[in-house]
Image (tube, rainbow, N blue to C red):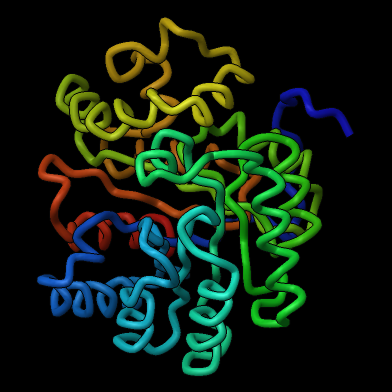
Length: 301
C-alpha cells in the first residue's frame, strides 16, 4: 500500500459514526485538584463520552490519575495518551496496566509512544532509535504477557509507526494532526484497526480570539520535528509553522467557532473510529463542563 497521502474514501457502514472521547489537559493530573477531577470524570461519563484520554506524563510508570478516574466512574474507558517508552520501562507500564485491568476489567487502554527528542533529552536520556525502542517495549510486554495487543495503542504519525500500531496493538492514537492525515492513516492501517486521533477545538466565534486561543496550543508543538515532518506530508511548510501557525494550518488543526461549526470540523475526521476531542479554553486551566456538555449533546445526543 502506498505511503503517500491519499484523499478520504467512502466510509464503511461499520464506521458510519465515530465514538467520541474526551482528551483532558493538565488540571486532571494536578494532585491538588483530585476532587475536581473525580467530579469532572463523573460528569463526562454522564454526558456519554466513550473514553477519557490523558497524557501519561514523563514520570516512570502509570500515573495514579488513571486509577483515580477509573475508581470515580463506573463504565467509561480511560486511556493514556501517551506514556513515553523513554520515561517508563516495560516492567513499569506492564505492571501498572495489569493492575488497572484487574481492578477495572476492560476499561483501561495503555497508550505508548516515543515522545520527542527535545523532551526526552531534557532529562538526560539519549533519544536514539525511537522506532526500535518502541518495538523493544512491545516485545517485553508480550514476553511478560502483561498487556495484550488489544489493550494497548500507539502514538503514530508516520507510516512505520502506523504499521507497527496495526500489527502490534489495537491501533493508533495520532496527536496534533489534520483530517487529511486521518484519511491517509486509515489507508495505511486498513480496516478493523482502531484509529483514534486527538482533535483540539475552540468554542469561540470571534476569529481573532479563537485563533489566539488555538495558537497557545499550537505554538509549542510546531517547534517539534515529529509534528512538523508529519505536516509537511500534507503540503505545509516553514511559512505555516512560524508564529504559532498560519491561519490555514491553525484552522485545519483546531476547528473553532459555534458548536455546530466545531462539530462539522470534527466530522471531517470521517475515517476515524474514535475522536478524542480536546476543548481548548482561554485559561487553559479549567474543567469546561458546560462546553463538554454542549459538544456531547451535539455529537452524541
